Image (cartoon, rainbow, N blue to C red):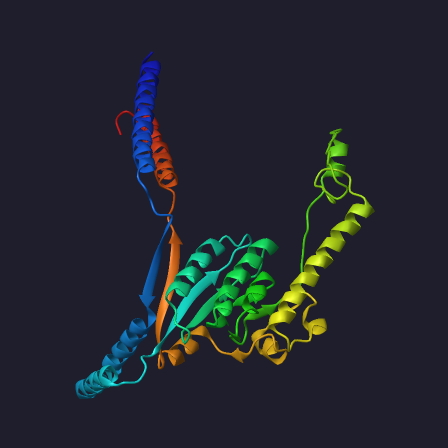
Length: 339
């Protein structure tokens, strides 16, 4: 009887807590849904200021006080001279980071970043995209490449920097640029197309499971996961891959006319040193060195658009953790009332 009493008390507390938390979360979510919220947020930060601060900190650590004061005076004189000078102000360099996944969902932010740049950029301004991607879905990376093409169409000089990898869909994006730079051991190329899928038909047959699939249109489905594939379907699938590969090669050839496509469009990848020899990239450099050099002549700004997380997801996750944690504590107390 004592056990039943303790268990009933535990269950009542747990149910009360769960209901209270669900009501609280529901109220918050309902309130949030009534409010107008921005889809995302645009940030523009000065990379030039950060680089100047690093330089100043390094000087303070390495030089004596007199030398530091002398440099600071010279810097002040230089800035005053720039303000008084009738020369054109330094141009802007806008920096965008793109770290692509398989589904290229990062293009949702990229399109906003490109749009923001096009709204404010002058003809003499430039853009640097720090690109990192091993590729992914064709339509996703095709759209990402089209976003970079918008900059080229607006006659804004575009440089793509590859510190680690720009392969397959990543290189599809990179080749749009006026100039591609890469570190010596960055992975470049892989101008090819791949598609693969398992087939469970034999497993289903082994367990006497039938699978039916009905289509309208001869090639609505060429290969299937669960049905029995035939050679005609496989050949059609291969033909479609070749068509995509052909479009990929044509796209690269349009933007990198100096390439020997028969040599580089084999699906292989190369390291930066080799890619430079094969003209897949234009120069060997890290993005860090590029920015240090550009800081002498440009004002450098990082442009970043961040999508806001869904409030329901945030509170739902927090509520789930809270409920699990509290129920666990209540259960422990029901088993060990003295703790």
